Amino acid sequence: MAVGGGNAIRGSRVGAGPMGEAERGESAPRQRVIFFCAHEHRFEVAFAAEAVVPESWDCPRCGLPASMDQENPPPPPKIEPYKTHLAYVKERRSDQEASDILDEALKSLRDRRKRGEIIF
Image (tube, rainbow, N blue to C red):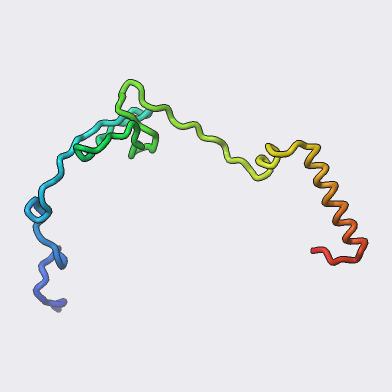
């Protein structure tokens, strides 16, 4: 049983053609820069010849910052632990202030309950 004929060439697609300098034009001049991370990974990044090369670049293998200085790569960033909402509140308020606010809220709630207001 023959499956679908046609003039399609295997492995090609519409618009596919030879990929060479003639179709794309000439490549811009490039400079290749080698970076090193704290895990001793070495990688190369290509920049345009006239581009300003950044001092650091993220390592594609481990994600740490890397620099061009093999002897002194940047240290891994310090990761702060996750803070809960309560931790942020405790930074802003003392225990006494928190107690005062709680007492005030409870008093207001009890006053509303005495007046017969519906409380959800």
